[in-house]
Image (tube, rainbow, N blue to C red):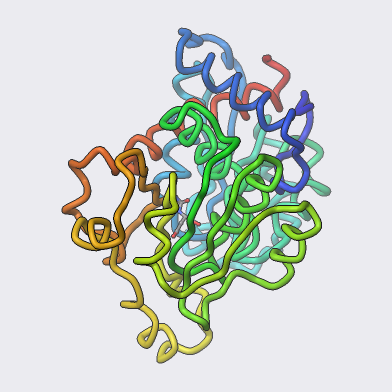
Amino acid sequence: MLQSGDSVISIRDFDSEEIQQVLSVAARMEREDNRDLMRGKILATMFLEASTRTKLSFMSAMLRLGGEVLDFGDTEHSSFKKGESLSDAIRIVSGYCDVIAMRHPWEGAARLAAQIAGLPVINAGDGANQHPTQTFLDLYTIQKVRGRIDGLSVGFVGDLKYGRTVHSLATALSRFDCRQIFVSPPTLRIPAGLLRELEEAGVRYEVSEDLVSAISKLDILYCTRIQRERFADSLEYERTKGAYRLDLALLERGGARDELRIMHPLPRVGELSTDLDDTPYAVYFQQARNGVPVRQALLSLVLGKE
Ligand code: NCD
């Protein structure tokens, strides 16, 4: 179970019971008034890659629990500009706070930070690798809108190669009885290593390029942005960026079930039409809001306040 002093680095470190522990603390955070729970505690945010939702919802979570927040700033205006190493920066920041939420373009950066810091580090995204806190809020959203996680068919569409939210969520869903369908262009397929992991866990999955024919099978469709910043070749990005565009007409053509719910970690850049926003299918804005109680749960668990 997640406890005081622990770091949150990869969803691989969590079994289904540990996942349920976080989801039920999050539900309590949403229900109860905990405005003094974190009094005297300081969260440092170190976001060395672009972020809106993750950073702000971490800050909001801490502030709404009565804690305080220190922001490291961006790479342009910090000591990295002078050539400071990541490990030195982590050592310094850990002297000023009680917990660090960190996003970094290098895979494995959060694990390294946790070894150095001597206090809990929460991975807010490490390159194309993992985004565990997003996964907890994705699971929380699924449980809220569908009443359960077990027994669902979950489709993923978009950039399944570089999308860290996809990698973390697919691993987490393998802890439950879910069918998974991966729809992407051939160049952005889900990594073979992840599929092997799913096979070993006995997960039923399909890999496809055809979104329309997948639609009618789905309870949840998790749509993602093509991750422009991860492409070595900008021409390759230009070739794939318009591969899928989800809109109401496509859902109707595919025979979507009434109960289908569309999720997206956001930001969207053209793959998800605004014509879905006011339909019962759309849960992505609710999903973003769920970042606050879920991150409140994670912060309070690792700081021993639960
Ligand atoms: C995601 C990320 O950073 O991986 N955003 C988020 O945290 N909500 C998805 C993305 O950037 O496409």
